[in-house]
Length: 509
Image 1 (tube, helix red, strand yellow):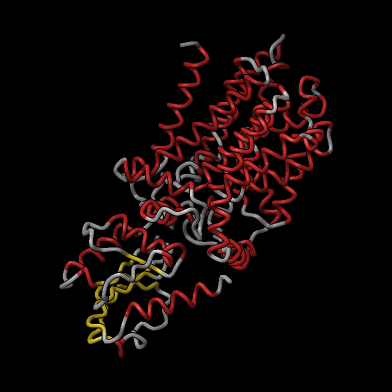
Image 2 (image 1 turned 60 degrees about the horizontal axis):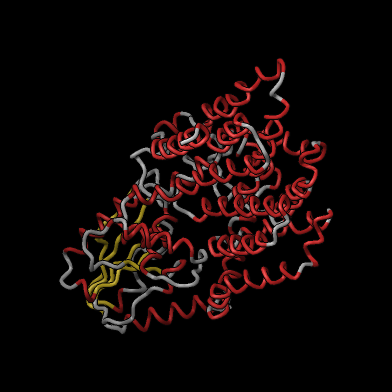
């Protein structure tokens, strides 16, 4: 094993150690993680929330035992692979050992540590962007047309993970058109590769067509409820924080792409960052959508700095350059990760507020960061539902109906009785409701903002309706959740559920 390989292996081991140490046992899984894990039981070519790749990974996690260890392993793995790809990119650009160490350090001690704590499509999305850019570099350097086809495959896989990678392509194409590399657009291989990529994503596009393009409904809802609160200036500020310890490397990359002769053929990447950020800003995208844009620039910057800091007194700046990302990470680690108790966050609320971490997607400040609040109360809720369901006579004829996907997913993840299958009209659960059994009893999970606390709507249709319990947690996003039991249905519950499901789906069309 070579010295370089040993050093790279050390970075990978450190990456995994940090990922597992930056999550406190105070926290449950995050609400989105429960939804993604449940997708393993309903494999399809598409979902309302995400394309299908996440469900494939969930299937592997389920096969491995579905423990929290494996839930956290895969985002950490994707983050580690980003380090590997950046390492290989630096080698492709003829970077020296210092450049390799600097690049790996910059990627390791960055916002990816926060992103890679959660099992969401975002970690694989960043990996997809990074690999796709690496393929572009390989093609520019070699002009070997096989890389066009490999790029199409990488893009297709990234697309099947998260549609966000379309922004990567939107920013890249005009940048290529501005340089001599636009000759790629007259190659028949480019169009054959594009067709091949389209064929790879066709199953997902067909699923969207068959289901009346729910992604359009999802984007509209996202724009109305979340993106409307996005501040464009705030978006730009966040970009500085994501790789703040590596900012000098990224700036060096932009300078080098314009003036450093060995990078002359890679000039399209200078325009890529401008075009891509412009598109994100125009559409008022969430700030973290752009994280996948930056790692490749760390490669360029590291190689450039490795070349200019190799002689004379400049070589003494090398340890300083490597130390900067680490030194910036230390204070950031005090607030950006779910490794602190809620009490600590409340005590130091001013620090969190100044950094904008208490601002949620609704545009308002709350007592905890939104992701952190989304990690509380789920196991407790599942335990209460388990206990209540154990007192019912026949779970085979009992429906557990939740207000949102977080509740349904958490109950399904933590349940001890396999007969309990929670469902909801929210997100993908609307497609997973079973109609193959008669329903006599219903366990209803309602949020605190529910106006019908006396259940006046349901009482006429059941023999008895009562409040069976509550889950109250001051740190959770839904601080109070009520659990009702509806016994002895006088109506065809399946029909009522089906009617409500059809009504909601009609909104997508």
